[in-house]
Amino acid sequence: MPEAATAPAAQATIGNSEFDRDTAVTRREPGVYDIDLSASWTIINAVNGGYLLAVLGRALADALPHQDPFTISAHYLTASRPGPAVVRTDLVRTGRTLSTGQASLFQYDDEGHEVERIRVLAAYGDLDSLPDDVRTSAQPPAIPPLDQCFGPQDAPAPIPGSSAITDRLMLKLDPATLGWALGAPSGKGEMRAWFGLADGRDADPLSLLLAVDALPPTAFELGISGWVPTIELTVHVRSRPAPGPLRVSITTRNLAGGFLEEDAEVWDSNDRLVAQSRQLARARLA
Image (cartoon, rainbow, N blue to C red):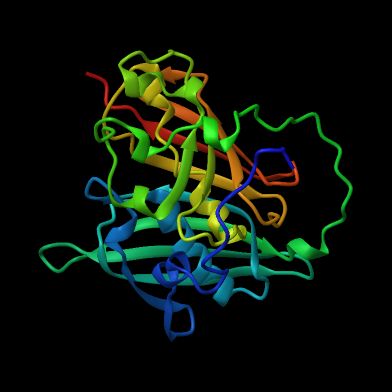
């Protein structure tokens, strides 16, 4: 664990935190779950995509024989909003080590018509059953210590796009990726930060689904401001994270035709790569 990677003493615990309460689903009948999407996880007026993925991930964990997401791919069809929603799940296949399922989240529009917001396909297993061997060329991101990084509360004025979700996160951004906040974006398409939940809850596989989509968009460092809606997001959960703050690194190599990709890595306090993701997002070009 890096020398300065310390975090506030945990106040909330896994299973007993704001994140757990706000992602909790109520089983109405087998395969059908109700939830009231919380306004606490919004960006401007839209519900954060990582939070939504965690909601669907929790429903699938209940519906499938296995508990841990190994891979989950989501297509964001329409923008979700705070309020009642229904998640419907289906078991596609189950085996000894992996179960495959699909799920969709629905809400009602102003005319009372049911609208599908997200559709996912996922494979679940048991992370604790995986072997310990690691053979990798990946390296943890070089991020300055926590006390040398900056969060929304350090900004002299509200950061563009900041909203309710920032109060739920412990987010400290690498100064090298903060040029956009000072009016001088680097043009490199990189974002790095220390990440945790503000109430001190340690990370688990479901909160990793939030972590990959919680940083400011890399488009900001490309000189593009405004909302960057997710079209598709795939997350691979590689290991159960150790207690302590996470390090998240996101890069974009190509913006073309108004779309960009974001590749994310999440590292835990034991220098272990615990999650990876790729998403396709739309950039609102001037």
